[in-house]
Length: 272
Image (tube, rainbow, N blue to C red; front, side, top):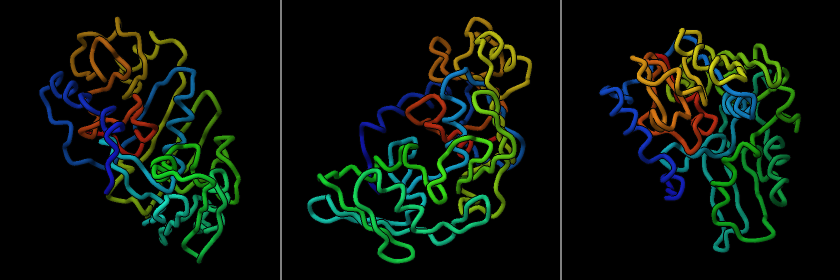
């Protein structure tokens, strides 16, 4: 695997701070089951988490900065890093049951260069300029793979290949998704049976929802309402409370660059 140090820097220290706050291991074996409930402000958080749950990209950057394949099973480039080829996984289906098609990938890669199908499960991409970091770029949510170029909005009709299928959604208000059975990531990601994201504009109300047990994670809560509360954890710290997390939530040892684990919180976190 390839490592990009600047991405790894973003993750440093987060798990250590949480571990110190609780005295407990944050890397217990993930468990399946339950509904992971998040309260988020009225910004792009709901869309960020929903995209991470519903859609996949060709590549994925792990919280420690390691690059790994997602819909791509492998890739290589020429000596100039200008012509690339990507091999696609063969066991992927969209939530409507359609198999991932090379044309779906070609339509997305056209955003960055001249793309064409080589075979039924491989694609060629020619860039106008060399880019050795292309596989990292393609992990960005701008390049999620959609069916027939359908796009990612509106949320209630989103059709991706991710671990969670949309059951109910209202833009800027609410998202509810259920785990896809027999997903290609089974046993590796997507631990909760369901994911619910609720937009609560008021930071004090988000804090109250977590404190009273209505949600499991609160993003950017009012810290005055949560400091020194027993059973809670804070990321990156109690003084800089980007996330407040209930004690029953299991977490990976490291958290991605942004507070909501780069939008992958639905796949990577679980209910202990």
